[in-house]
Image 1 (cartoon, rainbow, N blue to C red):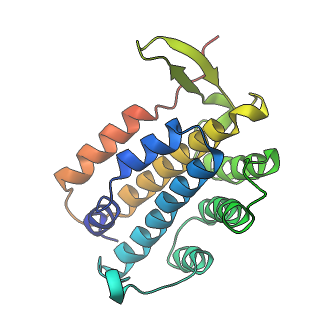
Image 2: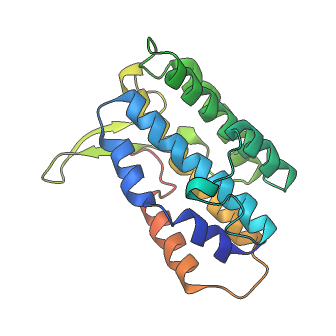
Length: 207
């Protein structure tokens, strides 16, 4: 695997802007669709890096159309950890539920639980802090903390719970890509990894 190919493909879209909008928009549908777009890009990046071809899926009118579920299976076959793949499948199912059913506009507790369970299964194998140890702090325009969201927060916070789980999932995938990189380190990858880690620190919930 070449981390350069992974990062070149993944960062060809504005990752930070998409994630920021997913976290700040007051709309479960908008959050889900944006996080799914990022997740699908992660999966495609993995496949491109494994094949050492950042143009594998083409673009514009020459774009190769493949169902996201098939891409996830392909990524698993190319070495993506199975539990990460299962977590991506949960997010893909949530996206399909919301995109194809106009009556569904909220993120159900069952999807949050399933998404968290699959992600935790990977974290336990990698000896990382599970999701119960992690949280999201919500600040006002002055930077003062308004509230803290954990997986134990009520259903009204499911949008931020989804962002929390996805941020951990993305971080774990970045770590795995770094571990598989067989060439000399690239400065761009190192900077992105550092910046991302600082924004999703593995902190315990304050007491």
